[in-house]
Length: 469
Image (tube, rainbow, N blue to C red):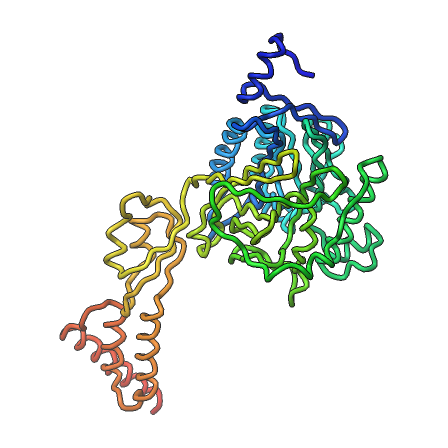
């Protein structure tokens, strides 16, 4: 027990108002000191995040500085919230062999959380991570409170105790079905859904092997029959409460997994896990858990009527995420297993935005509350071609990433091209060039320019006749 010399009554009061909080851990077990809400109920708190994708390159722009900016906010949030744990549900890196600056950023971030703030971290591998690289030295780091689970045969649950008993954190790292079959001797792991089932069974067996609570788990078949059609609940209220059935008798459980669970809404920036739907995981696998912390889908979302939630990615990693509000999820679980979730937004260093309009309108610059430094996709509605559009736009928006024509502009171009294809044998070279010049410059060809073109055309015709004679 932690003691700083206060009287017993004063210590309890300070803990109730959040002044004193301390966590000690060893060999996969963590003891959380009591924390109370305004009604005097004791609860356990952790922060759920995922899909950092450190080392990401966005339209040839390295996002390391943007990621560091967001992670600095995240660390300040941890300091303010004083959680009992931080959960990172996969895709820590953007690729299996991350660049040096990404490794350095992760090292600095985890050091500030685990060593600086003394908050334990449970982290699993995602489909972008190399499980072997990510989990290197994990056994040594557990003593400091950093639990890294990369391989499917290392998913033993981690206990955190509060006044009501243990909360079991069950890490289920991403693994291809063939890897699960080989490492767990699970012959039935033919797709991602059955692979998750096998990993959950292995986690339960590991609890029994070291004398854990009696198992009271249903892996999902009969629950699936009673579920309505799954829909993602987007933009849910800032704080939402749920109830669920315990996985272990008398215990509360948190599953940590990475994959595409049925009912989730995808974004452009997520790497497909499989072809033909074999990457889909049945939501019923997670229904017995008190809360499920998911990674992989980049849009923050709670699957309707459940405690299964994607925290979403750290930043916007595609332009179809421009309307997302990126956040991390603060989760509180009381002694009865009631879950309260609260999304805390993260402010990006540069936003990812779409701009639509005519070229001269876009060139007027950002509006109120917008930054010219944002990463921008420009949709031009002009029917005529714009000369040197990218460089001219970058004089106003330095981080323009792409220019796309609008559907109306494309329709106009296609119409013009169809007309040209139909009538080309009746149109002179001068008329073709005149139309081409107008489309490229947006201006009419001057008389002297027509004369110059005709002179060049006549010279080429004479040379062609000489060569043929």
